[in-house]
Length: 107
Image (tube, rainbow, N blue to C red):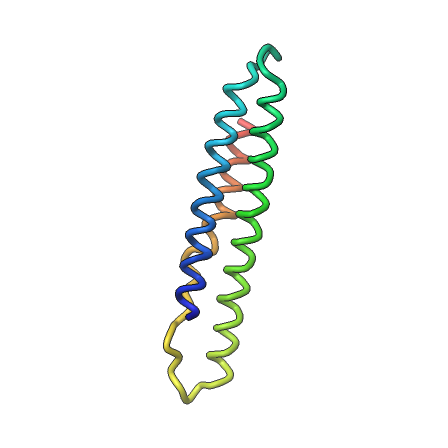
């Protein structure tokens, strides 16, 4: 059950990240840098980008919570081998991408 929940959260992160990128791209196309364009369409896509970003962050934090829960559960029962070993390979990717995005945005 734990691996299904974690894989579902990873899939939700993928969908939220993809919708964020697409909505930012559509919002950029709706409003030109000079301010000429459709402000209503820009606001619409900007709101979708905000919701998908918050959904991504919430899914990432719930994934961290699930991994920590099963790590603590495995530490309490050292004699029994847990059926699912938690992995932290994917946990560092979202903060790293956020940092790289900030660096690219500054440059």
